[in-house]
Amino acid sequence: MKERYDVLIIGSGPGGAIAARTAANAGLSVCIVEKRPAVGTPVRCAEGIGMDALAEFIEPDPAWISAEMAGAEIIAPDGTSMRLSSQMAGSKVGYILERKLFDRELVKQAVAAGADVFMKTRAAAPILEDGYVCGAKLEHNGTVADVRAAVTIAADGVESKFSRWCGIDTTVPLREIMSSAQYLMTNINIEPNITVFYLGNTVAPEGYLWVFPKGDRMANVGIGISGRKSGDGHRAIDYLDTFVKAHFPEGKIIESIVAGVSVCRPLESTVADGLIIVGDAARVVDPLTGGGIYNAMFTGKLAAETAVKCLKSGDVSKKALMEYDQAWRASKMGKTIERNYKVKEYLIRQPDEKLNSLIRSVKEIDLAEMSTFNLIRELVRRNPRILLDFGAIKEFLA
Amino acid sequence: MLKVHRNICGYCGCCVSVCPEGALELMDAYLEVSSACTGCGICTRACPLGALEVQDEGKV
Image (cartoon, rainbow over all chains, first blue to last red; front, side, top):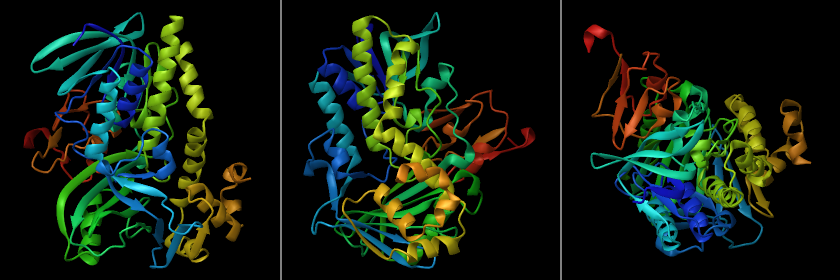
């Protein structure tokens, strides 16, 4: 480990790894530190990503793709099912990844581009000078070393401690944390190419339950519920166990996963002097779907590109780095977060009867392109009255 | 004060993200509680597994 890098990245998930790959490819000296002993594990993810979204960052490889998805099914509280598929028969719309191997591949690519990486190395505190973040104090095997950097990228996930130490409030409101649990199950009967979402206040209050196929008779069966709906006897794990007992009594659990997923609005500012915040740490998870892989990679790449520019001009002030903040907010991703936040706020207030009638209104749709945007537009087309309820998102649907 | 039931904790960091005091930190698989903890109990609600409990001083 050197004493000084152009860019120091805290966290080796997809956000950190893409930031590292991008910065290293541009010729910067880059260091990734990861406090856990291995990349990609323990998994805190349902592992789904859209096909086009993935292709923006990496060529798909069966080595880390568990299954290819052709469509989705949404199950209403009363059991009514809505099936979504793409108009093009046989076309694939997304993947369920093997995150352990996917994350490893991204880090491998960052290293191939020239980045350093250190495992079991924890950023214990930022180095702060004149209000600038100038790197971090790193703990490794009982030793502490100062590593300085012109730009530090906080990619430390849902915990988002590093930015907090730099004076940025990253606290997620209790009602906007998805308290989540997931089993990787085998020996279950599922449709191998369809993701299934269960809605309803009895199944998953203010959240949803998912079945994401991982291959032959295998799936991620998981749930996220709002923190405010969680408590003794009615936690994510309790809802999950109830569902699994009813739906997959013969299934066997081969991995037990827990997680917190933020569905709040992004941080008010995702930069500070010498600091850029990306991915879950910046709270840029899609508030409707809970999906965060793409958004982490997107912000990671943008963060690195901004760092490259600012290093060249010799200005890494908050004002200069603000270009990153403005760019992601103005992007399709930023706009989708804002729209989906409003849709999420609408949906969590609906009683089961309303969810039933919404889903009944669209039992089967062939979407030209399968996306949450097209689904929402179709729901609104068939239920124009809901525009009265959430007029605020009208502009996005025009 | 906050009791961490380590036989239940899945060290996912859900609690860390909701703590308004920044009192929680994951050291890999070990959840540390700092003296900044006020015993507000928000984390005990958010935990997917029920690994956290606010206890009276005398009971700990």
